[in-house]
Length: 196
Image 1 (cartoon, rainbow, N blue to C red):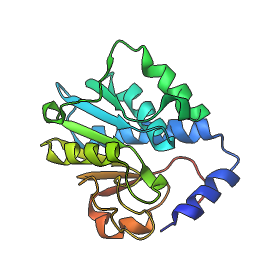
Image 2: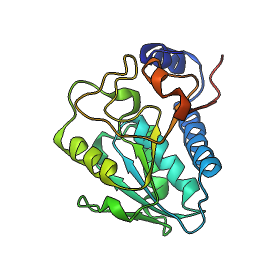
Image 3: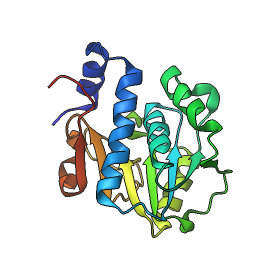
């Protein structure tokens, strides 16, 4: 198991470009979803924020939209997207297979919802927008997939910031995060190319 701090250090010291790690993470999300669910005739919603977790989500969208109807709900601030996340946002922004939704998204019409909101980047309390989106995701009958850790959960302690996405499948990277110990049965670990 690995802490979020150890994970950040490993990523920074690996010498692997962040863009490549993001590409591998996004492909891993796509592969894990494809292995778990039949994507034929499915509707998928990927909810992204402006951190690297959202960047991973944008990469996954690029792969998912070739197999299923894929919508994106971007609840972050485009001006805060870091270089790699912005590059992946731009790759899907004008893709005719991808529909970007307005803020008042209806979560009930989807078969699969991907939570690419915060990942290990949670700090303190959830803002109002994220809190409302978690409620929307949880009220849906869709299969829920969390990227790295479910939004609302502390990656190191497993403590919940009031609420969290109730994920059926958690796709985490490199190694199990400490906070996911009690969710091992629904977690898959994806190799993103970091040294063991």
